[in-house]
Length: 171
Image (cartoon, rainbow, N blue to C red; front, side, top):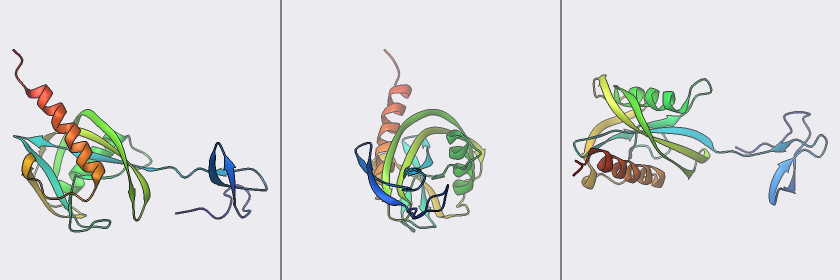
């Protein structure tokens, strides 16, 4: 979504070079429209060398497999958003063990999306498809279905490496 009018004074925005980038800004009051990425949180649950995926029930990429994930709400931390999305989409309750990494990706609907991936440990609940998912299942890491989001692939790869390091017996 692109702004066309100033949120401070209502004037039509114009394009201007600011900080080395072309940005929309207000010629009347100087307000600058900074188009920032939308923050999301993704849960990476790995159990017995299997990763938890959901089949998306909403666009973008409806009907395709992805990590349990979604937009972080204004009144919650990224960790809280991750745990909320996990429960909404899979029926499972969990706790965040650690940050895996942060990635980003362009969405055909939302523009640039910031993906914050967390390793999550399941602490209860019943595995079931949730409000905006069609199916939910664990897949062997080396036999996952195609994922539509490159950011999810990268987060899973990082999560697998972290899990291998922390669960490998030390000599």
